[in-house]
Length: 262
Image (cartoon, rainbow, N blue to C red; front, side, top):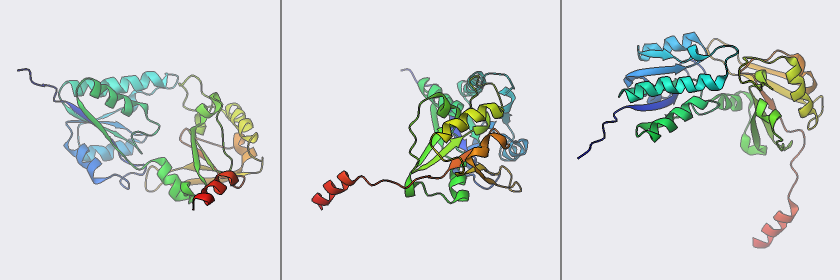
């Protein structure tokens, strides 16, 4: 009788945005008990903190390089993690924020592992979105909330409802068609700005947001007129939050139908 000898496994966990503040007990337990941990974080201090939980930590940051297609980088990350899974190890991929939000490699490595017969799953973490809602006081259920990656928003014709919040992620690399830059300059952001000015007034107030990585880091919340966006400093991880510019319009026909049912 044939037995299943595939003993390797992988769990992708989220360690949250701010060092030490957001990690869930279950995610910490997975890291502590893993045979090997792959760390996908943007700060060397955070990597050192993860090493305090498990000494066998491999950084995934080594695969990034300016001018290198990020899609190649992500495939290399997946292969590095899968090599240990195939060797029978209990592997953890520890990623900042939520491992499934703006992160291709965690989804792909889980898909690959499962397709090869290995145990694989994801544990959520506190994401930049969660921090943004808390710091800006946004309740997405109040008027609705739309989320787009900034470049995707530019590349495709998207329908925007200006009566709801619009959140644009990674505005610091807006318009990068190469997937190889760490930043794009103001000329690219000017194109994004012109798209937004088709929807919103030039003086509409928008927020540039960055969640802190370290407890001592400040939270960035810069309110600016939309028209100034192409002239201000932004980073790869900067998020733009655009509040509603108009009120919601009632669907009177539907309301009348519902009234007949009451």
